[in-house]
Image (cartoon, rainbow, N blue to C red):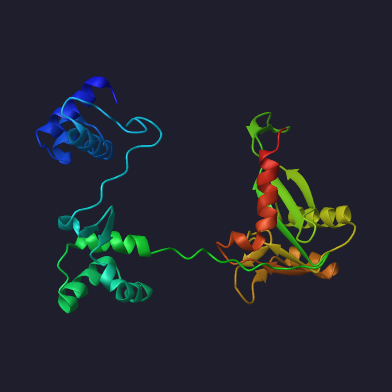
Length: 274
């Protein structure tokens, strides 16, 4: 902080101005004001004219320790550590959090049942320290070689269309084997039922075999009517898969994680240098 602001903050602190008032007058962040208040308290305790900032300056990497909260703010001070007024009710509050209750409801019950003397903000701060989010869980799926392939369309880079001579984004066809992550990639300008089926055949020839089943998105070239149990496949696509004895497994709508391998392969292709 600049010297003139430091002088202003110390002057206001000397006049017992509140942090809110100092922030309004100077625009200095309240956390900074709090550190300067701790420094100012240490200077006043040593001597009126001597400045002893401690091992590190306020603007250094290690600021002075934050002063403990006071009883009026919902905590009691014991030595150098602050103890929340909610601490005696910790077990009960934890039980309420397991029931998915919010801080406002917990505070109201604390007042009604236990005569809780402190403020809602005290409960809110205490609940924030106890509440934690459970990490999202994913099941690890294991596959045999040649068991599953994932297929999807992506968007290619801007390229001159040989027919129109204008820049367009072609469609990027990608099929990825689930076990080895090996991918087949082709760029096409137009897509149709026949093109979609032909691209699958090219991928099968590239891999030298066919997978047991193919996981695909619910695009019209492959799926006419999405359904979790009995999806209606495009007739041309269905006949092609039946010829190679491959089963189609359309993913659920808005469920890209089911075909995450091909999604990653598309992103890798789009981000690769050209």
